[in-house]
Image (spheres, rainbow, N blue to C red):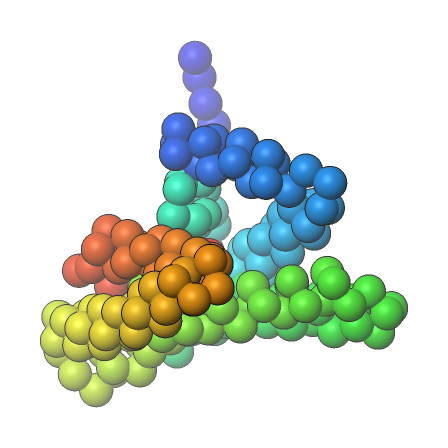
Length: 201
């Protein structure tokens, strides 16, 4: 079957479908999932808009159990500064949407949207904050050393989150933080050594 090479590929892994099904089941009667999906879509649109402004186009959107991954191609390679702008555009879009929700008095979707934006600013690859920190380090150090340093610091931060999550699970029977730390650990392991090659949620 012929496919336009300019048309981006969209891939959904079995893990993503399983995760989406679990979220639908857990969200029954709560109503958070639609707002969460809207926040994620706006986040990705922020990345896409910034990439288009920088002369890029979307090559692939991969939906996996550890998040959505956008792959861009550019006419000319991006500087670390422009790459950071593309990374920051997603959280920036969340901050704008969250502010709009607050202005309208919709506090629940506002907190959810702002939370997604702030979460993505954590200095951990594959999150956007990790992309920005990598760019800052790679401008001053060898890119391989920047990647190693970021991976080591991200591992320490994820370890602290996992410890806090274990305490919360034992004392409050809440495993949310622990599961988030494990999710981040999977992302760190998966993307270690890939540097700035992709744009992540």
